[in-house]
Amino acid sequence: MFNKYIKLIIAGGISVWAVFQFIDGNIMNGISILFLAGIFVFFYFKNEFILLSFLQLRKQNFEGAGKWLSYIKNPSSALIQKQEGYFNFLHGILVSQTNMTKAEKYFKKALKLGLAMKHDEAMAKLQLGGIAMTKRRKREATMLINEAKKLDTQKVLADQIKMMKNQLKKI
Image 1 (cartoon, rainbow, N blue to C red):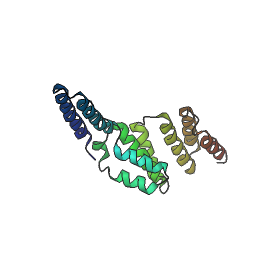
Image 2 (image 1 turned 120 degrees about the vertical axis):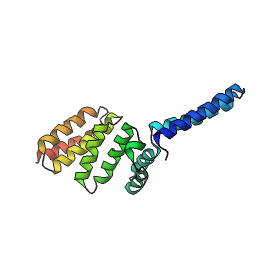
Image 3 (image 1 turned 90 degrees about the horizontal axis):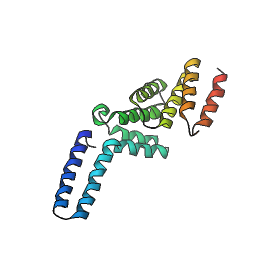
Image 4 (image 1 turned 180 degrees about the vertical axis):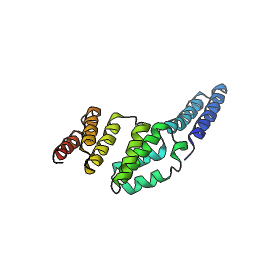
């Protein structure tokens, strides 16, 4: 909704207001106002539209996720680097249903920009491995699936990795 720097300016202004509340002796007001400033700082690091898009994806509502992502007009200026990585990651998931070539570009860009969690990185590499497998690039697919397996420390993607390795044997 707001540019990333505007969020920090608003948080700074609210923090100044909290300081004045502390000076006036209104300690509880100052603490409450600092929590309000904390919300803007939180949304600096976690974009609200990306969070809403993830919630829609959990419900398997791809249309709703796409709608929330479409509110981000210029991701390179509106988002910090990791958020832009997740923006591309989500676009890759949404586009992978229809256009593998576009999805591959989004996933590669997401990995280049960086993802905060290892299992998200594993998921992106697994998706890239699947795309490489459909394009008959066996060596690249094997490498990406093995990297995904190393990154998946909690074994969340173990079944998908096993299934893709079995499909890879058939190529």
